[in-house]
Length: 389
Image (cartoon, rainbow, N blue to C red):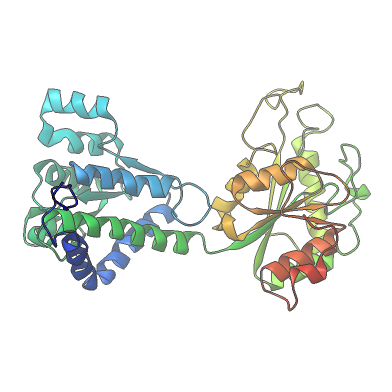
């Protein structure tokens, strides 16, 4: 051994790539990134999707972008539709074999793209032929287009074709790719902030808001628990959306129909609205796999403990699930909230495994805990603890 690191690296080079990235990021194109994010937000608001493509490292970045949109970046929330055109090796190689690699992305844009969608093309050179052809087809079909580019791509074909060129100020590929990663994070963060800015409290119905009647379907039998109206008003004043999520397997079992559920919910809303505490949304699941009424006697993704109702409501109301709560009286409520990414409160004597984030004696105690933990009232969580976790 000669005392060197033994990794073959030239002395003093270890920090060069970081220094290049630091210099490039000092001139990060924040304005263009905001414009690209706004284009994608508008696409999602009208029900569209994002397509992304690139070659080599740019293909990996296209998949990275899609991953953050379909999954999440920083917020638990409803998934956003996105596809990486370089991810399906069977399609990619079939199209390239039959029509040439230059058409590998254009062919997919023609098949999958719709007016109002967004195509994101990623090219450090700004001159990749398959990316250029994808943009040309996208423009013909009415898609908006974004280009991730490097300094060399500023004056090349993609830079002049896309609606929003985002140019990272570096000429070497490695530094541009580092900037593209930061650009993906910036865009995804801005998209999440724009689309999922609300927080919510998801509320079970029977045993949480109203007295639990066995398969209750008579609106005249609705009885609100003490403190419910006051608690809902406090939560609304703190900026929470209020959304009911209720299992109604009586429909699947043939005890009542969906019209009966609608009558129950209409009466409940009118009772709450008299005090200014009407709910912002109502979701219910009519299914049960052991039911005997078609088409409801099925397994589904919405019946708690599945998180489907919460995710559906999050999409409708633009809810950041990470900043939200699920309040219910049984284990299925807790599990649904946990799987959706919300914090959970279990009201009453039941237990749950895994345990909820908090156990409260009644609805009023649940509300106090939520407000204290969220910083909406003075005090500490310990001061309002009734049962604890």
